[in-house]
Length: 250
Image (tube, rainbow, N blue to C red):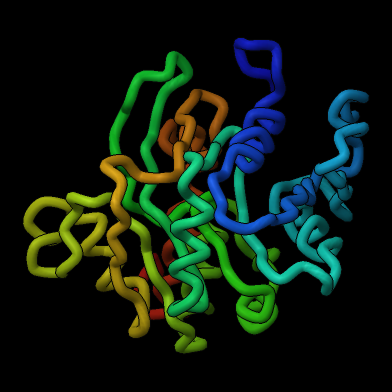
């Protein structure tokens, strides 16, 4: 999908990765999963930093797992960035620094609409803020094919079961204790209470979250919010998560 500037969302995501302010050289490559019949625009197909991989069948999870399986063992780190999201220039440096002490990093996001207006801060750990060592991903395993709407919750539940150390990045003024988060940022309290036994909140020095998430009518979360079949599927997945983990993992 293309944005108003004529660029594809994916090109904006890659540009945000290339704009990272790092103190050491890094190679960033995108493995992008698609449906089997997706027609890939020539400009994107020729991009040197993008490898497209077709899923075995139609759907987000087969596409994601196909892309993940295509990543060879030479890569040290695995991260996720949805094509309509972007990283602020400081994100990778902060996340890499956190990985000196932790095995997995997630992040709060700044949500904006298509006009660029701020909607809210979202403390749910969406995949666009995930960064981890390759060994972490190998230990937790692939995205569950049984998930459609809440694969992130399910994967985070399995992460928590490993006991691996996790940091959730928040902006400089955010509360970092459960006591204070309960009062003013209940979703941050959810991260602490539902994220498993080895999680903590980690402030960085910037006043905004370092992941930007685009909220628009075509998103999956928008579809679920409109009700109908999508909403029923979502609620059924939540029930399965509670049965499996005793909670909805964050």
